[in-house]
Amino acid sequence: MSLLTKAEVLALLADNDSGDISPEDVREIVHLSQGIYGGLSNNHSGIIMQQFNDTPTQVRQWNNALPSIGIVPEVSGATSGTLTIQVSGTYELRGMFSFNGNNNITYHLHVFSDGAELDPHIGFTRKVGTNNDVGSAGFCGLVELPSGSVLSVYADADDGANLRDLNIEEGSFVAKKVG
Image 1 (cartoon, rainbow, N blue to C red):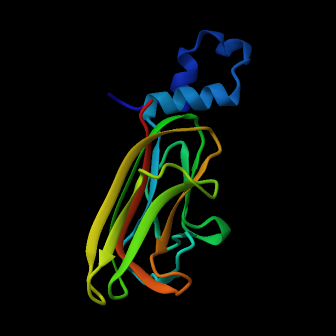
Image 2 (tube, rainbow, N blue to C red):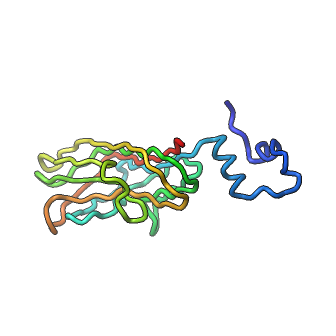
Image 3 (cartoon, one colour):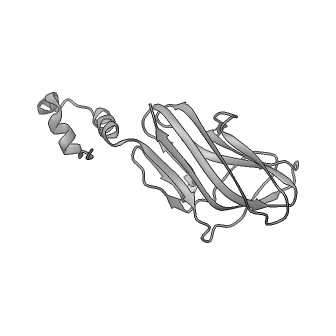
């Protein structure tokens, strides 16, 4: 299957001659023909350690926007570490992380939408055994998302108000429209 350009899709539409196809309809047709996906990754090149306590805080340790269509990944500025959904639908969310942190601290990572936890079942809990012990964990789940949703990964550490280090050595956070 080859991907169609916007011009090729428009040429296939019967009412294009009258020019009454909305930009939103064109975007939906292009997305349907090419798929909707996007993501963020971290390959541990100069990303600094971030500190967390028992209050969920957005993970900003990203340095690469993955290829995307219909999702806007941000790796810098005020919206760093976000995926903005442009088309409503059912999305598969996946994350895979290898990280280290402080001795005997349990970390939780979950997906948030517009600053609120999206689904408590899409995330993970992992206890770091010894300082600089690097281990991995991941999550996957399906959710309904409206257009304009801003997704991000949040983390917290089970140690009250004490700040604890978390360093994502390698990581990815991907969204793909599946319905």
